Amino acid sequence: MKIVLAYSGGLDTSVAIAWLKETYKAEIIAFCADLGQGEDLEAIKDKALRTGASKVYMDDLREEFVRDYIFPMLRANAVYEGFYLMGTSIARPLIAKRQIEIAEAEGADAVAHGATGKGNDQVRFELTYYALKPGIKVIAPWRQWPFKSRASLIDYARSKGIEVPVTKEKPYSMDRNIFHISYEGGILEDPWQEPPEDMFTMMVPPEKAPDSPTYIEIEYEEGNPVALNGERISPYELLSRLNRIAGDNGVGRVDIVENRYVGIKSRGVYETPGGTVLHIAHRAIESITLDREVLHLRDSLIPRYAECIYYGYWFSPERQALQSLIDEIQKNVTGTVRLKLYKGNCLVVGRKSPVSLYSMELATFEEEEVYNQKDAEGFIKLNALRLIAGKKKH
Image 1 (cartoon, helix red, strand yellow):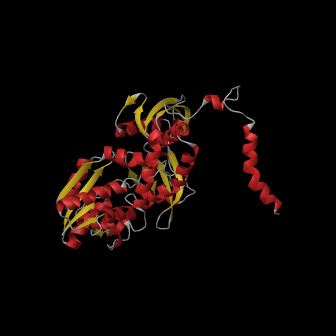
Image 2 (tube, rainbow, N blue to C red):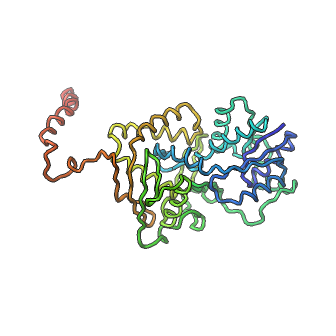
């Protein structure tokens, strides 16, 4: 038997290599995706081989991740429950897709992941597996093995000679990629408890940000950011630079209690510096390039689109249909946005577009000859008809 395991190098997936190999008498192929998490991937590869993997795939998916997953999500202005920009959610379908590709190339019998039975990630991985290869066998060790705690995992790891970090464990779990870093569990499980300042990685506390603002300009073409401060760069590089600039100015921190798909409320703390800026900038360029009713229609679809990503339905027909509509809407979302970053704030201070629908002549409060203000009287009376009719019946 041959199993392809989504491998991170952490305790859970390292134990999974040994446990899967022992339980299923299987050959284990480990796969680790480079999504810009900034880890030593060669060290992770070496650890997987030492732990018992027969082969390790280390794939650089950074540009694909930003271009084909993050940017489509940003074109939709997708936000889950008003605050979460879904940095973890959007990474899972890409990892799972590549896993299936490896499984097919290797002739593997099954795929496996290290997600627990309580969270969203198990759903995201497995819905992608089944959408892309319906007959694939899926193994989720956390739903099968006898280990009930981290301590029991550590005991098993030591019994198998698997490296266990001797440094003090951080009292929370983390997940990082180029778009964000998340913190959950441990000391964060009390929603009244303020996160410790030394926890944050991608951004400085707003009160320690520079005392003078930073101005930036982002250029858009058909809904996608293509240039930063006049320089055209790749999607990954653009997001990387924005992460540094926004992080230095304390922009992008969110602390929320969200509703997991499995029905559990969970407290999550997130840093999404560059993504926060891109979300705000995209809204700004849309404000002068989209028709009112088209904009309102798209906004009514944001919760549904966001649920598709958060719940794991990236490869579903409904997400793909929504994406087609959104991308059609985005064809005229072209122009430049100027932003002011200052102590945790990202403020839009300018926007322009060669296809702008904004008319200074129409909008002005000064004298003009385009708009006849008397026309508003009939407009108001026609819209009041149903209100008047309803009042007469009472």
